[in-house]
Length: 117
Image 1 (cartoon, rainbow, N blue to C red):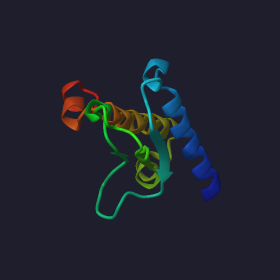
Image 2 (cartoon, one colour):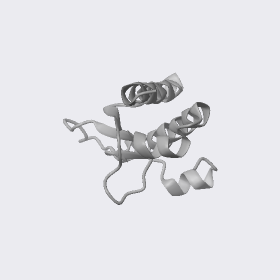
Image 3 (cartoon, rainbow, N blue to C red):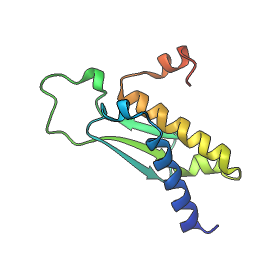
Image 4 (cartoon, rainbow, N blue to C red):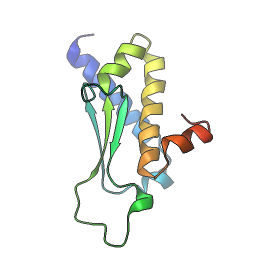
């Protein structure tokens, strides 16, 4: 595959992962954008990143703000899991769900506790 095809396949994997979230959780997600970027910020070994205000921390005055952002980093995921499409698909889904958990206010520590990290 060439670079463009790889990018398209990867973005489709992210869309599939996001679509796999149960409808009742999708209904609770507000003001969230999911994007794919090639690499994380320099020096940060990340597969994904949630930036925003988790639902559990939004108060009555929350509003008129930019969308929360879930970023999935293509480079590190493809370098680690890319040769095997099914492994890549599984890790992309895991990464998307991990970042969505942060949107719902679930910390890394809690994800470890419930064996989801």
